[in-house]
Image (cartoon, rainbow, N blue to C red; front, side):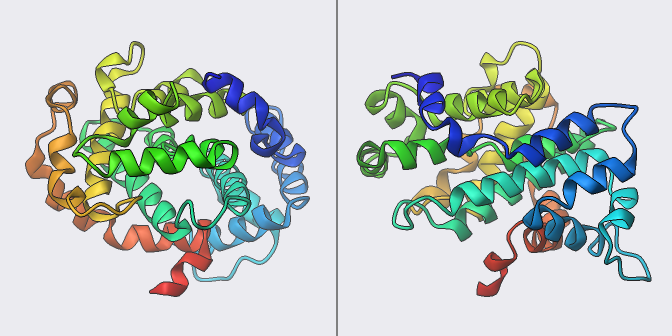
Length: 289
C-alpha cells in the first residue's frame, strides 16, 4: 500500500462534506455572492459556530457582536473561511481516532503554532499574502490521521521506534510503512482539490530541498515545524525540546534568507494569537488552560 491507496481506502472518512465542497467551489467562483456563501455555511452547524467565533475574535472583532451567518460572511475573507472549512473537517476526523493514539490538545496546539509561525515568517520574507502558508502549516501533520485510523498497530510501532533515537518520526514511517505522513497529507489535500502550492508545502515540510515549484514557501513551513516542535510538541519525547531547532535544515535558512535569531521575536508575536486561533478551531482544547 502506498500513500494514495491509503487515502483512497478511507476516502469516506477524509472527504470534505458536501456543504464544504460546495463552499470551496463558491469561494473559487468570482461570480458567487456572499448570500450564496452564507447559505452554504449555514448547512453545517460546526462550521457556522466556528465562523461566528472567528468574526467575534481578533482580528475581525469590532464594537458589536455578530450573531448572523449572513453578516459574518461579509466580514470574513475567503482565505480565512476556506481555512475554517478545512479545520472543521479535520476536527471532525479527529473525533473518530482512538484517543490512545493521539492527544487532540497537543495536536492542535502544535498545528496552530506551526501555522502561525509559518505565517509570521512569511511576512518577514516579504510575502504580501500569507494565508496559504498559514493553512499549510495548520494542516501539515494531517496525514497522521489516516495512518492512526487504518494502521493503528504499525502507527504504534512507528512511535516506539522513533522514540528510541533522535530522528524524525517520518524516517521510522518510511521504514515501517513504506511512506510518510507528509505523503499522506499531500494526498488528502489533493483529495480536497487544493492547489499544488498547498500540496507541495505539506508533502515536503520535512524535506524542503525536494520542493520544486514552491521552495521558499515549503522552507517556511519546514522552519515553522521545527519551531513548533520546540514549544508545542505534537508527541512526547524527552529530547525533543532540545533538538527541534537543530532539526531545521541549513537549506531552509538559506532559501528563506532568515536566521535563527528571529525565532524569539516570532514567538512573542504568536503567543496570544495562538490562543485566539485555538478558541475558534477547537474551543474544547482551551478548557485545559
